[in-house]
Image 1 (tube, rainbow, N blue to C red):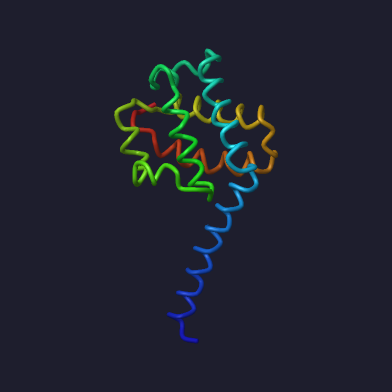
Image 2: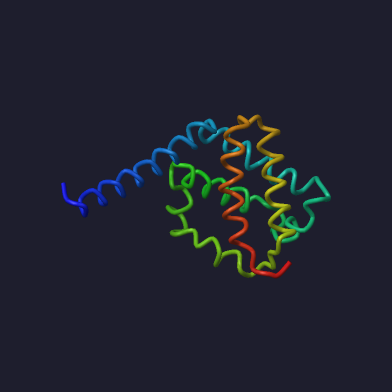
Length: 147
């Protein structure tokens, strides 16, 4: 087998591993019901806890559409049904968040709120850690304001 074919095979395996991991995330979290519980708890905490006032202010009242959109997005992102893409197309996360001033404080509020929600709904600790690493990368990429 020549070097080019080996590289193509390695890339195919990497892509397959990524897809397997995402499918596993959706299954590991417990599918749609548990994902919905986690998302709902996330937004409940955002409404209830003063420490999340900064990110709460960025959302509409009521937050029903935000709850649905995060659930739909995470469903596909974790390897479940691509509910968000079916309705809205590519998520364009950064572009959709540009109208909001997001600095390190807002990133950290979002991450803390999500960590708390995962704990409250009983997501297994190892899975929480794995998800938080991925959430951190995305949340950090959303920052568009110094600080």
